[in-house]
Figure 1 (cartoon, rainbow, N blue to C red):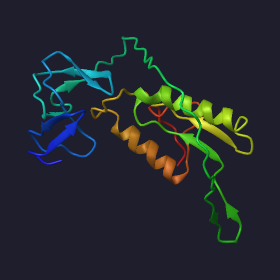
Figure 2 (cartoon, one colour):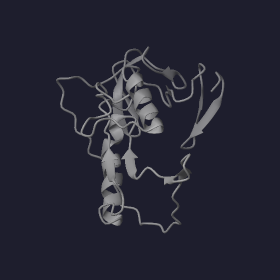
Figure 3 (cartoon, rainbow, N blue to C red):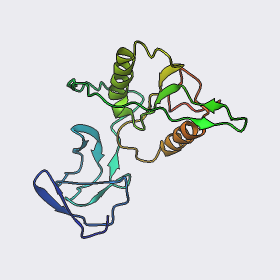
Figure 4 (spheres, one colour):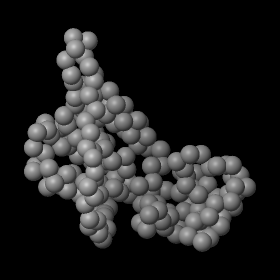
Length: 185
């Protein structure tokens, strides 16, 4: 979004002070140096300097709260939503010999660690509603080991994970998305 763009969120309008690239963050309110930067109601890091409303929020003015020594617990208050009936379709492809092919696994690939709990709920609900995925080859959750902010350290992991999902070579089962050593080529 271009500098000067007005963005309205929750009956509040913010004017961007710099260009903000797709997928990047900007401050909705002023954030004092040292204060937590909040995204989706949870702290994702802290401000290295005062950040004005409308300023780009990224690695130049924010640091993650995560460290190898800290113990963090993500405990959101999930609300069950009623199931909705839907038509179900299966996408297939024809092989060169005329046979039909289908990938018969469900992969759940969160791209940031703060949604691992939600991803696990998706997996559990799918298993519950499909009689433990009867008729499939499996339902796999490849959790992500980084936080919500994606400040740059983990972009290669996310790109690798999405490439592997698109091209059909899964990470070894039991590995998290942050551990990509030893992937099949």
